Length: 188
Image (cartoon, rainbow, N blue to C red):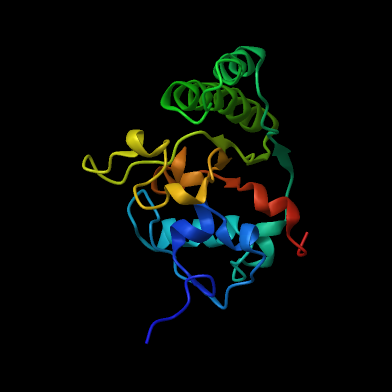
């Protein structure tokens, strides 16, 4: 037999497509497949942490002073999105996605500098992705509405990006930061 996907979700279905929310189903298990970066325990823990499913952080993780970066959409990015909408084209495309990522990184650069100057721990925002992230050169997302082949029926773009769609958890493992789900923790 096989297990129903809605109750035993893979990582892409849960963390990226958020199919459980669209279906109104609470899965019994989530497998951290399709994590990016190094596909290691760090990347998988980050995915669970962002989803509010990670419960093993020490009490010290929740203490300290924080600087929260709120995601924003600049007028230039909004104009790019509007341009596609006015042409009756989807803003879920590589042009909008690349511009959004560029702006996120610029915003992040300034927030990192401010957090260091204030001696605060940076809390990352929830960013929107307009394209799914490629796993390999053979995955052609551009012919599938910027979605991973096989996932395009879900119509999930734009979506809230997991951290590893924008930043590398492996590179950030030595940085003092918290993800956006941190603010929703009952342990605060």
